[in-house]
Amino acid sequence: MTAILVTGADLAPQAVKLLEGHELVYAGKTPTEDDLVALCRAHDPVAIIVRYGKVGAAVMDAAPSLKVISKHGSGTDTIDKVAAKARGIEVVAAVGANAAAVAEQALALLLACAKSVVALDARMHAGHWDKATHKSLELGGRTIGLVGLGAIGLRFARMADALGMRVLGFDPYAKNLPAHVQAADLATLWAESDVISLHCPLTDENRGLLDADTLARCKRGVIVVNTARGGLIDEEALLAALRSGQVSMAGLDSFAIEPMTAGHPFQGEKNIVLSPHIGGVTSDAYVNMGVGAAKNLLQVLARQTAASC
Ligand SMILES: NC(=O)c1ccc[n+]([C@@H]2O[C@H](COP(=O)([O-])OP(=O)(O)OC[C@H]3O[C@@H](n4cnc5c(N)ncnc54)[C@H](O)[C@@H]3O)[C@@H](O)[C@H]2O)c1
Image 1 (tube, rainbow, N blue to C red):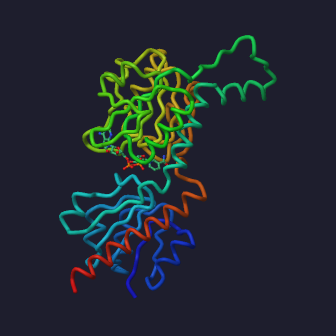
Image 2: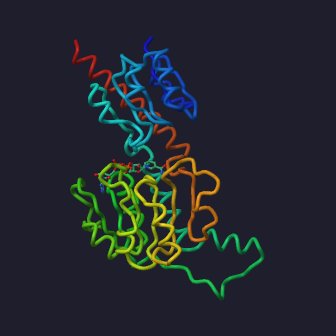
Image 3: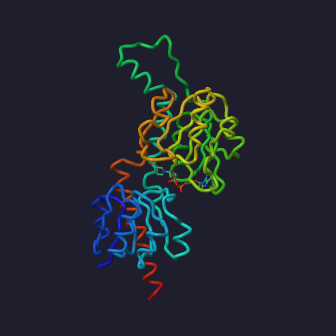
């Protein structure tokens, strides 16, 4: 029986069923590289399903039979794709499996920012009635700039369109955009957007995309939403822009270092709405991601077996 290593504590029962006939080895919720190397040495898996932790060259080298690394979700930035390619190991992702969940989280963060949901809730629980002093932001008629127009970006674009927003999008690789998304270069997107929302993968090309320079080119009072990856934003620069009013509000689900530790400068900032990277964490997405990851790796194994016959 060949082994499949799961860098997590569990998989949806539907995914487990698809993988019947393989030994499933679970690494737990916080696997270190050493843990994964040890499990690879002990079980020599043909596939790894990546939920938590990083899979780099050392892990791959500890599993001589490894053929495929399958992401339980869409972001593959925790997998060393260069090392995998050099070793002939395929990397696949369950793109779209959590798109609805993450797009809804982006919408929740956007509305929380524009309508001050969190701050007003706290004020009311403390006995205040701020009707005379508070004004929310109306999103209809305003411009949103989306960076990345894949499964999540396009789904969020539909939601923004339904709110009556003008939708600008930057994605150097996207083709055939829907009519409600206007392609824009980054300079235009920064200059014209009232809201900027990130939906691209984190790569060496776009690390720190929103930094002091690009934030200064944005409209004063812009709202920033990030459900993609924390590394896309220079967090110090964002904090400075929030304190100066250049950015009015930020809704963040992803952070440069996760989990966020006590004392992080974002904590206690009144104009930041935070969520702990739970955009893709719904019970529906959990099943979809598990099933997607299982199907993707089985396809690779079947193709490789057929090719070797
Ligand atoms: N918060 C969460 O829980 C959560 C869950 C899933 C995914 N994500 C993040 O969201 C990202 C998008 O996910 P998806 O499912 O839409 O992936 P996707 O692959 O469907 O779409 C990504 C899009 O980004 C584009 N892109 C690549 N490089 C770009 C660049 N430099 N500038 C602009 N666009 C670029 C690609 O062409 C693609 O269209 C993932 O990479 C991941 O980082 C977060």
